[in-house]
Length: 350
Ligand SMILES: *Cc1c(COP(=O)(O)O)cnc(C)c1O
Image (cartoon, rainbow, N blue to C red; front, side, top):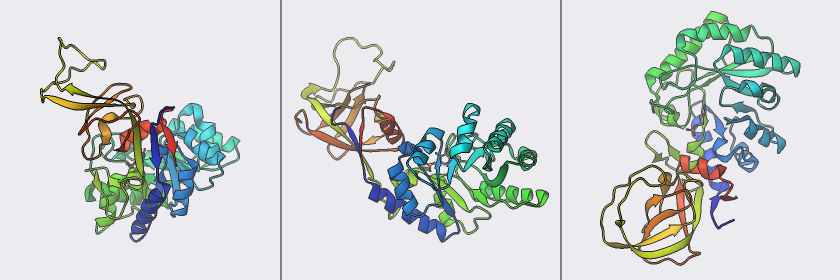
């Protein structure tokens, strides 16, 4: 192991979660806190539970199982449609799952019945960002299918925006979601308890809009962990944006020219980087690379400029020579955080 590590301040995350829970509660909105960026860390789950979130959400059943194995008892929502080969595990560990396919719903129903359980369902509706969800004109048909399955309970209807195309939540698309929920309720004579408007990208809308319609839940990951809203990556007032710090170690620091010499073709990643000649600089190499994190998504401290990265080297410009063993700390964005959490080469220090 090198000194490469992710330092995680759970108190700051707890503060972020509690602040968002309180702000949302004033608007009648519950928070499902999303744990996937931390691989379902049980320590994180404990902190989120203490902050008053109504449920935990994760996109991978493995992460949900990890939290269950650690004794976390909160309701847990599987955020990605169940993979057919994992249906039994979904019914076993997740309280509820997001769904949009009738085959998957039928398989969940059979698995729930064999396990002697009832599994809760959140049906996802497409609102224009073109990721998961049934098309609005298929919603009634899918609802009819779920209602006919005795071991499933239709608890929620949800939508997800701003992931693929960055489509923003608005009074129009959120109004459409509320109208669909009401139409389902009158058509089938049922009540939809949870209407989950979206992810961290919905926060501004949910806290500012004069009329939330039927939206009464959000699923929040990035805003809780990094204190930023993801549409423009602005810091959210009153939240910590530095709960995660990635610390890497210097392995070389040398006075070198900025422009390469010799004839240049493609680099190791198939790129042909632009060169510019800015004279000699202090070129410092850190023992962290693309294998460990998304090096393009790191914020460097004052006086350090990220120049480029290979699999194992991050090349930065520093103001002066650094000594091997010196450390530099970066603030990871969401993508950098995800990658460094999953790298076995990055030590996690809570
Ligand atoms: C990851 C995920 C979220 C959380 O998104 P953030 O932008 O991190 O708040 C919410 N819903 C679904 C379906 C997800 O996959």
